[in-house]
Image (tube, rainbow, N blue to C red; front, top):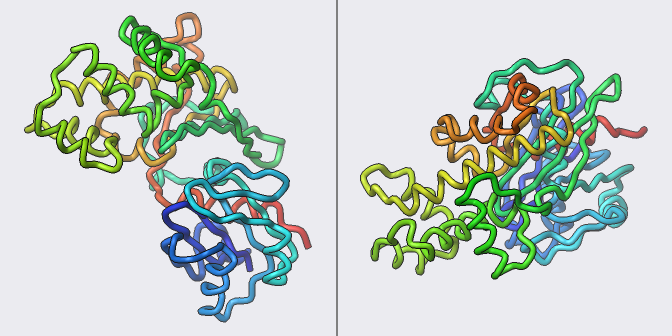
Length: 330
């Protein structure tokens, strides 16, 4: 039996899988509010106390950087040590992997019900696969084929330089350089980046901010959902929010194309994270495809690469389980 987890600052999902059931069909599963527990050890202890299943190993996808099998969870005062977890629960092995790496590990076993296809393309068998995941930040990862299976690799590609591809985006870069100095792609292609685009368009008088919207944003803990929902509401007809969303989609398409070229992902590009599933109708417009393919002489290379949005909300949990089974040691 394998215990797998998707460990986040807001919620934690735990599930037990067996080799027979595989990483897509948990025998038991439960989701907890992370802040209700002082540590992952306490949470896992409560979960296991409610089941008769005997756990042998564990694999956790965690929202934070894993260094030497230890991690501090982003936005939560949890420190996790794989050796401590092994000893506490008498496990033979505990894997800690960044949640984006867990998401990447799930990609090879996703099916059509887990995806929404933006560009069908023609995947090359064994071709590299790219994953770009705009959520609160921007995660990027990739997978390569070793002759028997796909191996996932993480990266910090989201912190590489933002490369503007239009006159508007050049001005956006100049605007943000005053504030941040270095402008990474994450500054404009993530949940935290959407308000940066919004503020640039507002400050540049590209569109006026309605008074009711200014009040709503001022009261919001996170302005991003307000901006997205307003942009998608045709009755509101908010030019400022619509321009913000269109600019974000153009940048996401361009960066997805950049990543596809960097790893030559002829096996496909997958969009993960919390934002793309909320933008399916918007991503299916011409803007995303045009930006993805807008690579000059390399356009024909990208034309055959399929692009999918991951719509399964349990992808990191599935990936953590799949990774655990692939690295099972007796």
